[in-house]
Length: 328
Image (cartoon, rainbow, N blue to C red; front, side, top):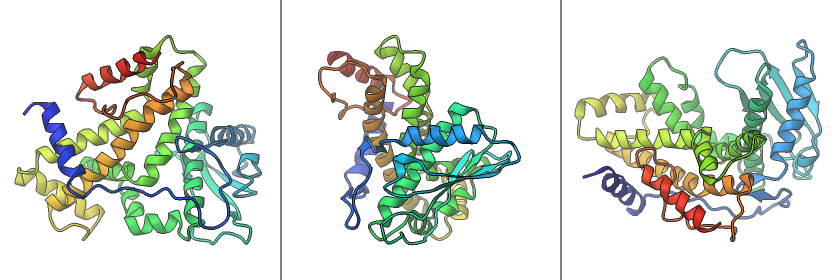
């Protein structure tokens, strides 16, 4: 089989065998919807991130905590607590999830975010956008009676995070892939794209080709290209008992007792990756067109039958370019 047939077979096998997970995006049953979205990113996300970053950059090095009252989030909280961390680890920022109930007016008492002190300004803004999206996700879960903390606990999300950066490269790659395909991370990572594009937009884009070439350099694109290729590799070695045993032993270290066999893990992992990639395939080009402000005759374009996130098949990229050009 050539690469295209192999990739198509794997997607059909896992997508239409009754295993594909879908998510319901219903309106809140309590309180009210107080933020508008644009492709999953709430309005004011970038402005709030810049507001926080400006305040962090204005601080003296001796100050490690500030409290802010950003206007864009006034519907879900009146206070953001920012802890400024001096650290050499790889975590640039984090949203501190908890299971405290909402207050009587359906607001958080506060939102807490940790951010590394010496990040470059633009990088800090993008990282903060990611973490604010987690706060937004948490709020939407809270008004439905759940929380991001409970979801992470039940899904093994917190267990997975503990292995990121492990010296064992297999453990590190597995934990990163499991982390990135979590539905909470998929949504938050998409928010980073707007920040990355706006950073680059100051230099302008020459044309559609230039814009899409830039899109392929962004963190969201690289993440889902890498995870998808890793999934293909795991499918490739499923009949190699030695290689699959090594992988499965690592899986059991990260998520002990969750899977009985390598094939059971592979089925679960593949459908999660395909779902995440399909979401990226749909959203990344649309977000890019929205924020790069490419002039199209219609607000949408035919990307449903294409696959943007596939590093091993450049023909897919050409299909996207042709679809965009046909709508100019």
